[in-house]
Amino acid sequence: MFRRQDRVLVGVSGGKDSLSLWQGLVSLGYQADGIFIDLGIEDFSLPSRRVSENFAEKIGRPLHVISMKKELGFTIPDLKNRTQKYCSLCGSVKRYFLNHLARKLGYQVLVTGHNLDDEASSLLGNVINWHLKYLARKYPVLPEGNGFVRKAKPLCRFTAFEIREYAKRKGIEYLEDRCPLSPEATRLVYAEVMDQLEEKMPGTKLRFYLDYLRKAYPIFHEKVEDFMEKPLTVCEICGEPAVSSPCFVCRLKEEFKA
Image 1 (cartoon, rainbow, N blue to C red):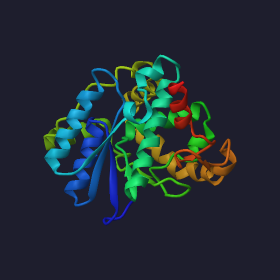
Image 2: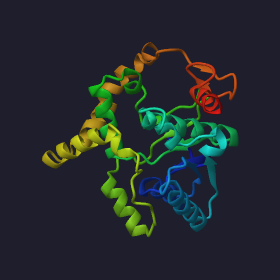
Image 3: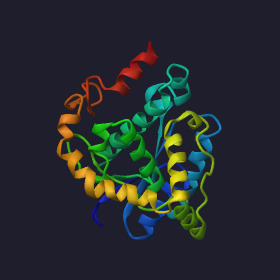
Image 4: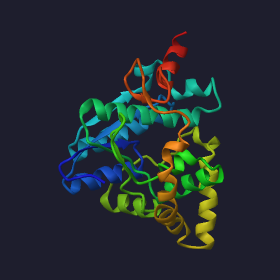
């Protein structure tokens, strides 16, 4: 996924997964710093930020904080008032800032705390809806290129239960609350289905995910260029890779200015 000497940027949310990943990498001697994106969600973003800042101080590593309101002029609740697709837009905005800062500050790899539960439920959603472009890129490590830094998910084979136990044993204080805007997210439906399958047939999540990586991913990935709706370009305003120019973030920024 990455080398010992690489500068690693960890996407931090204040939850058990990202903080456990950060703690694990630092304890193994990696040069791992954190990045927290303040989405401006009332009664959630501020506690998440405080937990993340306290943890960064505890392990003695820098935490970069990005304010969505300051950078773009709007927050996720502002998006919610304008569109029903605010959950998917939230994910896109976070990915934009993670890549943007990693490139700007010279990090070689960006890592996130996605666990097996996340990956299995996401895979189920992509298969049910046949999102081919996502299936062709759904892999625990994506190489750098075309304006993107290398991305990796080191916890992809560990369950939420295992990570929770790790955090408990290491004395990691994390925010247990889920985003108050997430109950409407479709991913939770797929997560519930996978939990039911796992309960009736233990090992389903790991088998489903690993068999996809071994058997199906190579087939989909071979056709990745065919599945892309548009070839990638570069945003004329911010310089980030995008499917059109200006990119969706710069377009949103202009819409909220109007």
